[in-house]
Image (tube, rainbow, N blue to C red; front, side, top):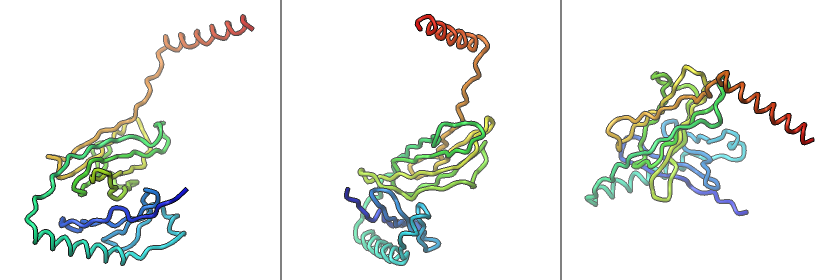
Length: 208
């Protein structure tokens, strides 16, 4: 089958140090350029063994984008883009078992413009350890989405929130998550289950 390597989301905005340069393979992000550190950051470190990328090339591309943006904003009296309201979903990577490591995933969809701040809270307190996130990923409708990950150890007394700040929101949005722990079976329920199992076994013996 054919494979496609291409530039991903490459953009520059007038808001602060707000640019992005990524590279994709078959639609999956391979790496992005960290603009503050001015270095290539691989989505999976193992990929760096198969090749390299000079971040200076990305910085030059973004400098051109910045130059062109300045010309366009001065030449045309354009109306600022509308701030869309992002959609936030939080879920676990795999079924939750107390005491077993897992990963929480915060999917922030319908982002425009691509400026957003995503943070995690545990019982109302900020969490920074075990947190990672993707770059902005593009969609066919020209909006973006971004994913934040939190590795954690599920416990019955900890609840989590994904906190999202965006210009399309009047205030930060908190998306709540807590483990769904199956309620223990009552004594009556256990009796019914055991009786059902016994009756099925007896039927099997009679039929056999």
